[in-house]
Length: 129
Image 1 (cartoon, rainbow, N blue to C red):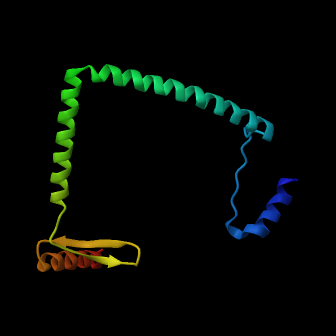
Image 2: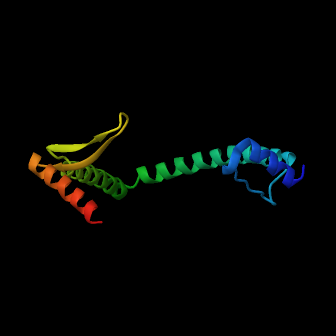
Image 3: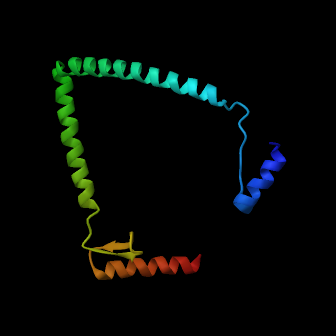
């Protein structure tokens, strides 16, 4: 089918929002099937190699006392950092809007006055802009 004829038919089906692309390097059905078969074979080989690599890495690292010490310290610090960050984002008062599915936070603070002040400042900023 010629491009002009195809575009006319597609325009009737999809309307003015029609968009398209043509890939001159696109494969035909047989080439895509051959590539898919090659991908499946390579995927199996990849899984075997990846499992061997993972097993070897695990064996090496389990025997490394310094690595195990650093790993434990990193885990401890990550948990402490995450806990501290979570506490820093925990406010007594949170105000926002809900559309039924999502709650959008508009202001947070330690008192109602803080929240109202933030909302007032935000609205004043929008009016000035």
